[in-house]
Length: 93
Image (cartoon, rainbow, N blue to C red; front, side, top):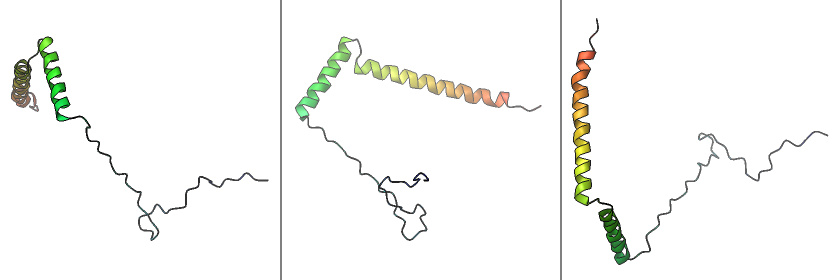
């Protein structure tokens, strides 16, 4: 006797061709958005603990902002330098 090759997965034969009149597009799952159940006071306390932790490690908001500004200035200087060097090396000859 020949083995049974039918698919018994329980899914119906739904046409995958959008032009077919029986076509059903795949359903989209709704994303679940979770809201924080913490109170505003708790969130403010966590912010203060984080700021205190940064301060204890020697980091302040001002020092982090200055470091980020310095990194941005260096990146800008590198891009300007690359822009100046590009036309010189592109000569064909």
